[in-house]
Image (tube, rainbow, N blue to C red):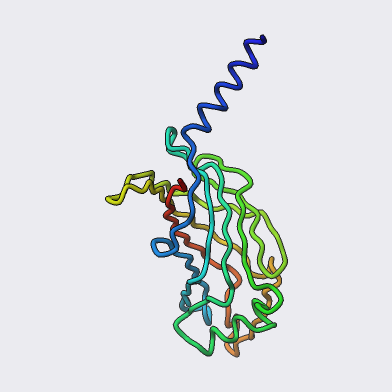
Length: 188
């Protein structure tokens, strides 16, 4: 038998033994965003309906894979009128594009790259990873946690609605800051 094949096979087996699959615990996770309003302040918002799965290597304390889905209609900016406009056809167009998705394509230390799909447009984006590690909770569940943060340009995804201000500038900024807190429970 080829010794090289045995070593490679053993390495894959060992890394699989220490890698766990996790479901995102939405009650202990959050998806938040921030965007400029009238060029002088920020509007913040969240999405309350989301789900995801990830693989986490407990031995090396590293994230291996991640995919998630956000329901656009769950947007909340603390203003019902604005939220209704955000899901309308000239903004997120939630009736045609009900979800926002993210799937990791590459992890490089503290940088996570992934395919982000919004309004039917997919772009590979970069997010910064802050690794929280793993723990066994008081009920015997294994949990892993991490944070992702970064920026996207909404115009890259066809979100171009805006109003020009009388004094110059625009009502809505193009840069959207993302902050995602993830806590997951290991599947049995």
